[in-house]
Length: 331
Image 1 (cartoon, helix red, strand yellow):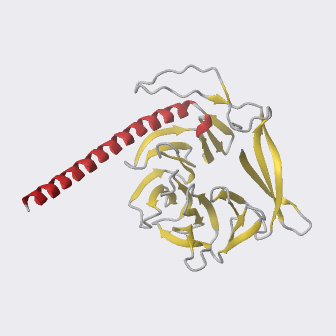
Image 2: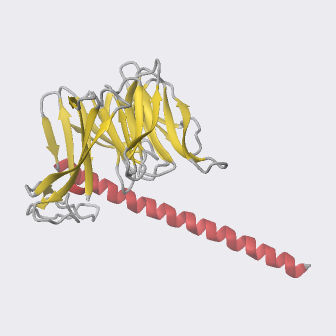
Image 3: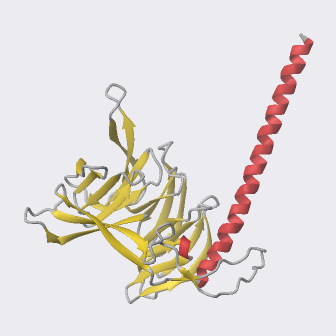
């Protein structure tokens, strides 16, 4: 079952706390195992020039429904403008996108675990890590750094705490996104007339050595693909671009909106890219087919690299063992 939530600062309880609504997503026929699966359309699969079959383009069915399962009050933050579920569904993060971020434990009872207050810094974006120990990253308005938060265990009390680490960049950071492994963090920096993308390893906590110019306008969306770790970005220049973070090269550029893109979401399970422009909202499927081909070819390349690394490692180990036994026999 897939859980979703909705927070509103207009409908409040008598005590003045913001209400958070939790929903389960299921199909109207009662099947909850594959509740988010779309209804496939009858499209032909044509092999591409690279020998990779194109995925079937899907359409949305009308068999999905939301079931309200719980309502809770959030008192640590006055107005909820952004919320995320993290820590494998155990923690709820809420923020007013100003000076406060609150963490709530979702396991009964629902209670406030920790509240972060920033006196002068204004939170502008939250990036959630899919895997522990890193929990999330915060970007701040007009600040050239992000703050990373991860879980640590106190050796004396064995209690789980939230530790903070600050990573600096050259220009102000306004967006952050983790890859599917949780090891790498991509951030969007904005300078004069240009925007950059920087990639850092959150485990080493070292300054970024991967940085490239991405767009002519401010970056409005940043998302990793799950299978081959390609990077998607959208911008106020109206383009959606696909990047190879290893080679730091642009693989695909699609111009969607003349007046700029406000936000973007890639739904890989549905093979649909949703873009919200300043004029209308669009669903892109034709370019997603190209993206699947890029991902598949990228995955083949990564597998070849992994096989070569394994061969080199085995060769070195074999030579070390041979040298060891030769020295032993000579002695």
